[in-house]
Length: 192
Image (cartoon, rainbow, N blue to C red):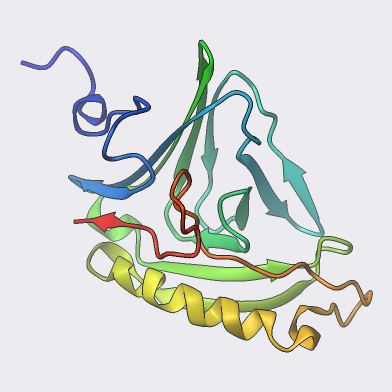
């Protein structure tokens, strides 16, 4: 019998863990973990609500539920806003000189069916562009395959990044990064 939650056994957040930076599946959940030093730039969670955005605080211990359908962005991790129909639980835990992060999404098999990639104007919160991807438990690889082409489409030409309401030019988008790896443009490892 296990004395601790199953996620602790399957996904170590220790700095030398082979699962860091990868999306892993356990039962009905998709789990991503990361560990970094306190000196590195924080992974800051933002959520879009109505005509504005909210920055979640970089507290030493944070467990926050991103409700299904709410666009969210993690600064330093991916250069777009993502909204999926599943709730996502975001963890940030500081222990000693390390900051541990985790994202958990899913639940029952029908809890995760689709994702959206969006770009939201940082000046006026206007949605500049969005793409929906049918993912779900068996099709999540579609998200990673299509992510790059949607980013390329958004980045070029610059008019795609220019807000038609206020004229602000959105910074170039970037893919979900494999933090701690030399090539941050690679598609994240997904282990299923």
